[in-house]
Image (cartoon, rainbow, N blue to C red; front, side):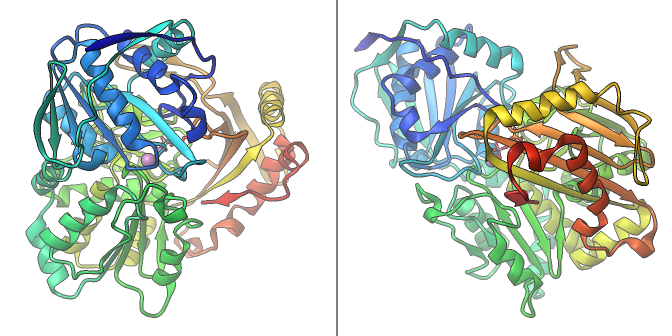
Length: 542
Ligand code: VG1
Ligand code: CO
C-alpha cells in the first residue's frame, strides 16, 4: 500500500560536485534520505511506468537506502527498477545499465573515495537518461525542492531480497535484481582487444590491481583474472566491505601507498592499478613510475587508436580546468577539439552526447570516454593494458617517450582538508579581490600574465557556470589554481593545483615537488595559505 508521509524540510541538502554527501548519522536523521529522494522525483517529469536503475557502492547504509529508494520509486509511479545484486553496482556500470536498458534515470548511492562506516560518509546522486550525472539545472531544482518539501510517498511493502537475482514485484512495480558485472564486462569486451591482452599476460606480464575492498572487486576479478587470465592474486582486496576494511578507498599515493611502494621496489610487477569506493577513479603505476592522472588522460588519448573501440580516432578531448594541459598538446597534434570544463563529470555529458569529445579526464584520477557517461576506473586500466599489449613496451618507456614528444607538464595538487570554513572562504575572497591587480606583477622569475575566476559557457546548451576556481596564469605557461572542494563532509577542503610546462627533455626527470617549488612558494605568498589556514603543509599531496 502507498503511504503519504508528512515531513519537514532540511536546509542543507544542496548537491555538491557529485550529489549529496554527508556523514551516515546525518543521513540517519528522520526522513533525511526520504526527503532528498522525493525531491529528486518531484524535480522530474514523465517517468510514470518507466525504468529506474538503483545502484550503490556497498558502503555502510547502502542496503537500507536501496530499500527506501525501491519503495519510494514504486510509490511515485515508476514501472520497473533494476538493482545490482547485493545492492552493488559501480558508478560506471550503473551508467551503462541506464544506457543499455533505456532507463529514465538512476539513483546512485555513494560517497565515492570518502571512507565508509557508521560514522563515515554516505551519498546520493541522480543520473539522467544518458547515464550521466544530472546537470546543474536539475540539481538546482532538486535543491530548491528540498527546501520546501512537506511530504513524501512510500510503499509499506516488505523489503526486497537484494541477494537473489531475478524478477519480483513490489506494489505494482517490477523489481529486477541483476548481476551487476555481466553487462559491464560485455561492454569492455567490445572496446578492447581481450585476445592481445590475454596473450600479453600469458607471456608473463604481471598485474597488481587493488580494489581497495570496494566496488570494483567483483568487476576486476571477473575481467582481469577470469576473462584475461591473470593469475589468481593479481586482483587484491576484491571483496567489497561496508567500511572498506577501515581504509580510505581513495586510489592516490597516500591511501594506496603500499601499492606505490611495491611498484617502486625490486620485485615490482609490470603494472599496478587501483580504483576508488564506487569504481570511477583509477590509479596507474608502472614499474618504477607513477603516471599522474593528467598525464594518463593525455597518453591514453594519444594511443587510444590501438584499441578496437577507438580505432577510428577521437572526435575531441575534454578535461576539467584544473587538469594539466598535457591533453591539449595531444589534441593539437591530432588536430581535434579540446574542451576545458569546470570540475565534475556532469560537465562532460553534453560534449559526449553531441560527439564533440570522445575521451575526458580529470586530474583527480578520473578518466573515461563516450562508452558511458561517468568516469570509469577499470576502463582506464583496460585501455592501458590494451596499449601495453600492442606496443609491448614498459609503462616507463611509453611515458618518457610521450614527454620527449610533447614536453612534460609537471603537476601536483595540494589539499588542505578539514580547514575552518570561514578561513577557507576568506582565503578565496581575498584571492578574488586581487584578480585585477595581479596581472603584470612579478614574483621572482614568475610574472603573472592573467588571473581570473573560471567561468564556463557550455557550447551545447549555452548554460553558464561561474566561480569554478581562481586561476593565476604566469608567463611561459605555468599556473596555480585554487578551489574549494564540493565533495567534503566536514569543514572545507582547499585544493591548490600547481602546473609547470617543461619542453626540454633533459629536464624531464626532476622530482615533481622540487620542479614546482617556486610556484608552490608563490601560491602561498599570493593566497596566504599558511597564515589563513594555520597549516604548515598540505594534508594530502597528489
Ligand atoms: C572531487 C574531484 C573532482 C571529481 C569529484 C567527484 O571534487 O576534484 O574532479 O569529479 O571529486 O569524484 P571536489 O569538488 O571535491 O574537488 V568521485 O570519484 O568523488 O565521484
Ligand atoms: Co568515485
